[in-house]
Amino acid sequence: MSYYSLISLMPKAQPYNFLLDDYPGATVAYSLRKLRTAYSGNAIKVRRSSDNTEQDIGFVGNLLDTSSLLTFCGAGNGFVTRWYDQSTNANDAATGTIANQAQVVSSGAMITDIYNGKITTVWTADQYPILTSIPIAQNFIMFAVVTRALTTNALFPLGSALTFLFSWNGTGAIQSQITTGLAVHATGFTTIGDYIVSVLRDSSNVLKAFRNSTALTTGSSTGTPTTALRFGFSQGASSTGRMQEMVFWNNQDLESSQSNIETAINSYYSAF
Image 1 (cartoon, rainbow, N blue to C red):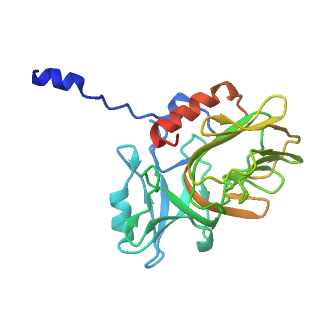
Image 2 (image 1 turned 180 degrees about the vertical axis):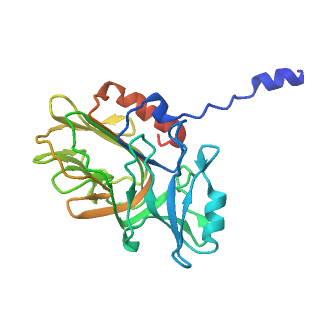
Image 3 (image 1 turned 90 degrees about the horizontal axis):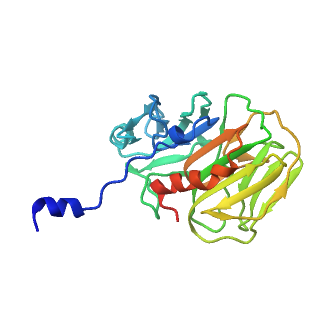
C-alpha cells in the first residue's frame, strides 16, 4: 500500500465547532473555549494567590491560553474574578469577593475534568453577578456543562431569588423555577460523572429539562421576572461543583433546536 493510500485511510480531524456561529443570538455565554468566530475578547480574568494581582486570559487556537495563565500564576493558585461574555451583549459576570471566586489553577497546574480531561473550574459556594438586568422572556433555553464529582454537589448555573432558578441539589433533583412555578425533574439522580444539562420554557409556560440527551419530566411556570440574573446563585444558595461552559438564549424559541445544540456541545466535551 502506498504512502498516499495510508494517508487517505487515516481519520480526518473534526472541524472546530463555534457554537454561537451556528446558533447566534445568545444573551450570555461563558466558556473556557472560544464560542464565536468574531469574538476577539478574553475568556476570563484571573487572580493569582501569591499577591492577588489580576490578569486577563484570552485564547490560543480557540482554547484557553493556558501557557500565559500558568506563567502568571506561577506555583500558586488561580481564581476567576470575571467571566467574559462571548455573546454580543457584554454581559460579563464578575465578583471582587475572594470567597465567591471559582478556581481554575491549583498549585501551578491547570485543573482538568477527571472525565473528559478538559480544563474546568471548581466552584465552592461561588457566585457572580451579571451586571446587566436581564428580564426573563416567555421563551428561553439554557445549557451548562457540569461535572458531578460528589453526590452532595449542588449547582445553580443561572438564577436569582424568584427569578430563573435552575439547580441540581444534593438529592439528585434537577429543578427549574420561574417566579411561582416550580418543576422538579428526575429526582434521585446522584450518579457521579459529566453532564450536559439544559432547561427551557416553551410558549405554553412549560418548563422542560434535559440531561445528556434524555428528556426529563416537565412542569408549568408562571410570571415574568425583571430582576437581574446571577451566574452561580439561586434562592440564597451559591454554586458548588465543576463547570466548563454555560450559554443562555433569552426571548428565543429554540425548543426544536435543543437536541442539535446539545449534540454540538457534546462534540467537544464528549459527555455522553
